[in-house]
Length: 82
Image 1 (cartoon, rainbow, N blue to C red):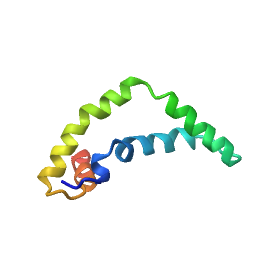
Image 2: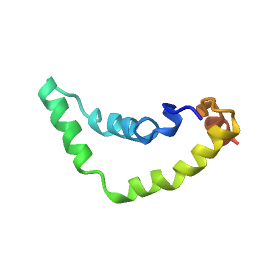
Image 3: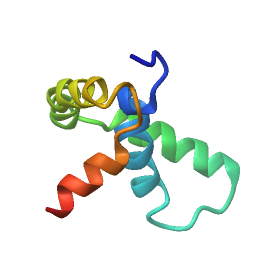
Image 4: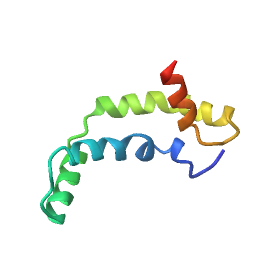
């Protein structure tokens, strides 16, 4: 199992995408505003999405193991298309 796989890290498979969507939903004027938005949105994360991330993490871990430790994003996208 790859110890640093982005497929196994909730920050990589959920948090960064979530922050990108909410932080950049409107234009940002300067670096201080960017930092403030990131901090604000991290503080506003509720338990519900975190619970969902944890619930889905086990299946992601199993999928990585079934694929010999390889990245699984392609596998996940294929299963969503079916």
